[in-house]
Length: 166
Ligand SMILES: Cc1cc2nc3c(=O)[nH]c(=O)nc-3n(C[C@H](O)[C@H](O)[C@H](O)COP(=O)(O)O)c2cc1C
Image (cartoon, rainbow, N blue to C red; front, side):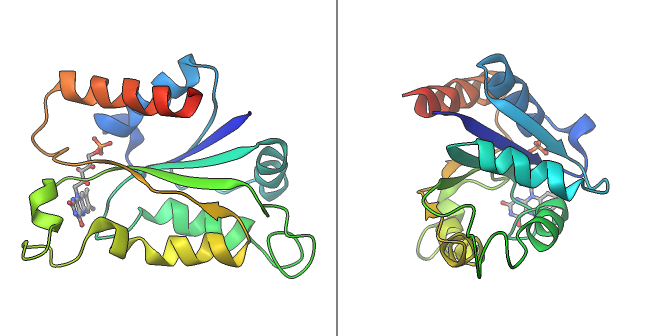
């Protein structure tokens, strides 16, 4: 099972969580492609997706969504005649997000200050995957990134790698 991890972070060099996760995935033999907002080689992105059995989208939670390099990637890579409306190249491939969330889980629970769950905020991605006939999977969520210590971040990286390899 070949896993492709597309990593999206506009400030990856200063990242505590996502940078470490990307390195941990790579060390475990996963193909990691880091996107910080640079122009994309669309053909290379599509070829990487085609050769993968499973797609992982790794990013922080920014403004109740993904950071903009993921939107750039979706808009430019998932075009008609490739991702949908024809060969549907991602059809049947598992699609999972692994997300670092700044606030604690309780803030996203019913009655919490954020009002909606992270899963609800992710619906545009769920529907994007469905439109491409990919298999949207339950996201891997790491809450409280804003106050967690290095040990927790490393443990989450181990858990992410374990779940992928299992
Ligand atoms: C521009 C920006 C927007 C953010 N928006 C949210 C948000 O909507 N909800 C939240 O819980 N945390 C938010 N955060 C906190 C990030 O989720 C947190 O800093 C990140 O998960 C830490 O991962 P990193 O060390 O890889 O950057 C935001 C941070 C930034 C910089």
